[in-house]
Image (cartoon, rainbow, N blue to C red; front, side, top):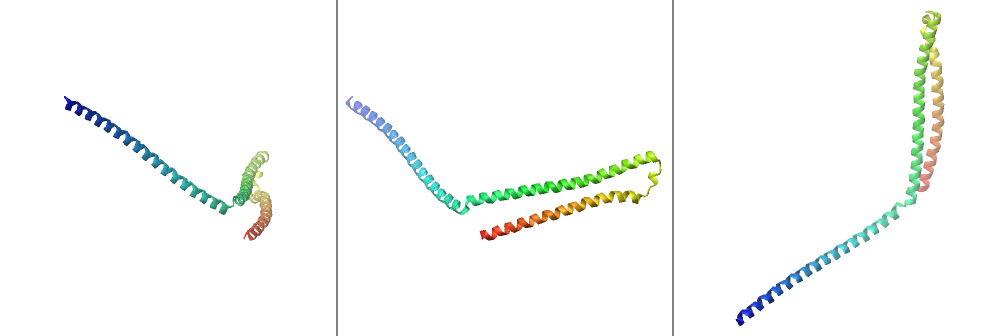
Length: 170
């Protein structure tokens, strides 16, 4: 009976030792994870400090105020180009529309004259009617050429200013 009690005590003590080993293993795993987390945080801090240094260097090289001024000038030039394009398109549209309107007007005049005068207007030479339509078209093309020449002078002045600015910057 005494040896059975001693054996039972040994079994209980072994179970307690096994439980303590499991607790110690869990604590060691916890410590290992905390150490891994600390290493990862240290690496992240290192990477962030390096990227901060790189960003400082890039910022020094980039010169943000100059880039902002350049972007504003670019925006102004793009706006000018857009306005000029709209004006050219409007001019072309009106020129094309005026030709259509003139043709329609000529047809209506012919209809009215043929109704009023009968066949007399229909017998008018074709060359006389075409000559009437050519005169306004020539006037419109002349004014467009004058406007293009004036715009070209402005562009040349702007180009000279840009070249002067570039020479100063270099």
